[in-house]
Length: 113
Length: 114
Image 1 (cartoon, each protein chain N blue to C red):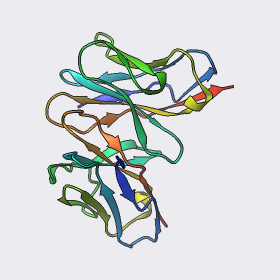
Image 2 (spheres, helix red, strand yellow; image 1 turned 180 degrees about the vertical axis):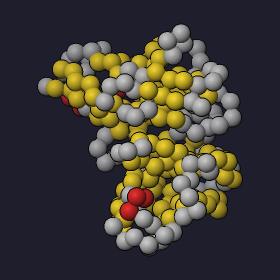
Image 3 (cartoon, rainbow over the protein chains, first blue to last red; image 1 turned 90 degrees about the vertical axis):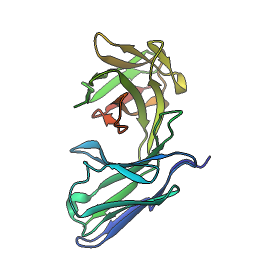
Image 4 (tube, each protein chain N blue to C red; image 1 turned 60 degrees about the vertical axis):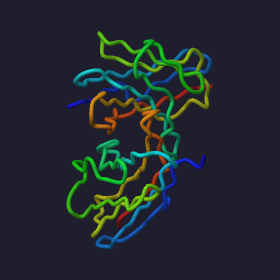
């Protein structure tokens, strides 16, 4: 089992640019979560999906952030336009009902200059 | 709203000694409780969870945690610490109904000295 896969692992961009983060969940998992980790705010949920449908997006900071899950094996988190305060580590996690345990990807470290 | 408190930013312990990392929670209804560990520049790794049943839960790498409902605590323990246990530890909670997102504590850095 390859685990949750995220790409890229590191992203450095300039303010105003569009950033797209990608996630492939563990096969067979029907929940997918996007979290953000910063020194100031710790780990916080951005959005989660069940069977490709967004269930709770209350953590998405503002309209600059959007997330999609076009199929069971792929999700994207897009920031447009990016700002320096978006700099953080973004984690994707997936979960199946029987185990009810979230497994995390390695994260994408985003730096917005 | 649910919340998790990890009152210690850092815990220092000598190798071979027992360790405890504290966690208290607040949630409406019965909780699901989790511990994760994060090594530098890595994602979170699942250690153990409490769903129901025995209050003492055993997990990976010799870690265990005790669920105490009256004290709303879920402290992480290990009888004999290793230098390789040095990492950042997160406690997390969710309630058993509906919303499946985890609420995390602020993390506790464990430093095991040789």
